[in-house]
Length: 218
Ligand code: E4P
Image (cartoon, rainbow, N blue to C red; front, top):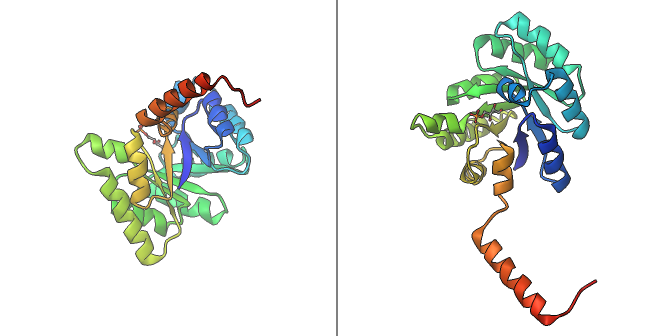
C-alpha cells in the first residue's frame, strides 16, 4: 500500500519523508487554510521536497470552466501535481478533459460506489472515498472501500483507490485489507502506526539488561 500524507505543513512532510514513509501528499482547501501559507507557493515547495511523487492540489472553483482554468494553472506548477476536483457532474467533466490533456486527476469527496464508478469512467487517476466522514454518520466507510475494489476489479479500471478521511491507525490496516491502493493519512496518525505498547515495554527491558552488561558496541 502506498502512503500519502494528508497535510499542507511542509515541516511535517520533510520529517516523514526523511524516515522514508512517503509516496505522495494530499492537500485540500481546509489544510491550506490551516497552514496559513500561499497555496501555489506551498504546493511548489511540497513538489520540490518529493520530486516525482504525486502531490494533490485542489481546485477552488465549482463550475467546469473554472475548474479547467484552475486545474491547468495548478498542473503547470510542477510535473508531479495531481489536480483534485470534487465529485460533481462539473468535476467529472473536468476530470475527463484534464485527463485527456495528460493531467493526472484525483476525484475527491466520494461517498458512494456509484460515484467511484463514474470517476473511473471519466479516467480519474485516483478516487478518494472519505472513510471517516462516513463513519461520523454511523455509515461504514470501510465497506465502501471494499465495494469499490470489487467494482474496479470487475471491469479492469485502473483508477487507484485512495482511502481518505483516515482518522485512526485501525483505518489504515482496514483499508489495506479492503484493497485500497493508497491511504492518505494525517501526520499524527502516520506516526502512531509505528507504536505498540509491547515494543516500548520490550525495548525498556533490553536497554536495562544491556546497561547491566557494562559493554559498549562502538
Ligand atoms: C484527502 O484528500 C481529504 O481531503 C482528507 O483526507 C479529508 O479528511 P477529513 O475528513 O479528516 O477532513
